[in-house]
Image (tube, rainbow, N blue to C red; front, side, top):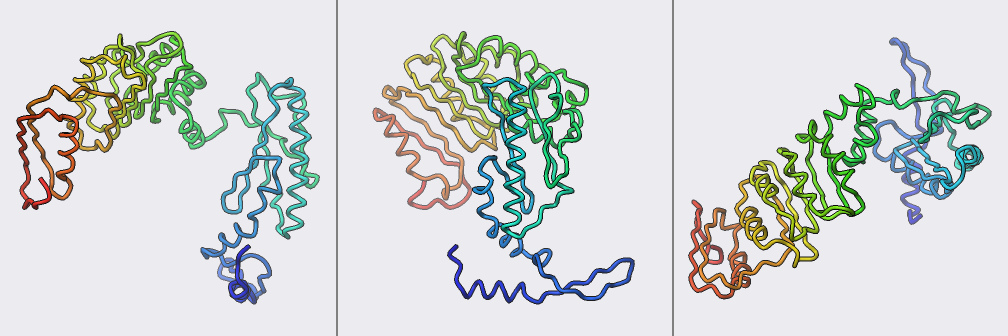
Length: 366
């Protein structure tokens, strides 16, 4: 493992001959030796534990394993192209095999399993639980003996689940389920993702639910052309007002698409952090929208704006007069930023630059 003998000896001395005492209600027990484990609260103890069990995931290769300190969560997915009953039988067989491997690993590593805390959860997108439930035993103790319904999960777990889902998936699966879920949906942040695989019916469904949740949208990633429509930008931005949008990415804009509503809303985004527009087929983008969008983003007033990406060609060749008003410290506004502009506007004959800054200006800066 690449650990030197000196380090191994130091670890041994650190762990050897340790003692402990138990105190209950002011009364102490006698001192007794600690033959396993490490000192509580030491940063070295979890590192040593992780190093000792670094091969556990490979040993339990029949499952997808997740580790957190001394906790292990294993996920075994069913085979999807067989009947539900056969899936349950197959899962029962593989789960029992997994527990057998886990017990064997515990023996090899001299690391006991806490059977009291060992639990199994069965999850399926079916009308009801399988009858009978899969029988799984670990050291003779039957697991899966209780049924946990979706409504039994805590709010914290729902928040974790929703962090991994986009708005359309959330509304499709959880909207109008019950009052508790609806209450949770009103307090989460939403991310909208629309790709080429979506259709107009899905967009209309999403838009109808966004009516009461628009203020929760913080991120948008939209493709303007989907399977059966090419005006998604106009549709969403005309129906919704994304007042709290922070991250915006728009791609594949059709020539017939008008970005008036999009540009109008962009001007009002006070907490916008990142704006990215990428038109891979640049010839289809409306020329007037290019001009207005470029001007709007370069003059945006949001103090939180950190990234602007305008990935489309824009013809600056006819610009002969250029007026620049720069407001910023010389330490961050370099002359190189103006040179980059002049390379685009190579026909400029009249250049006027105004710098607003109270600090001294160096010769190498503007």
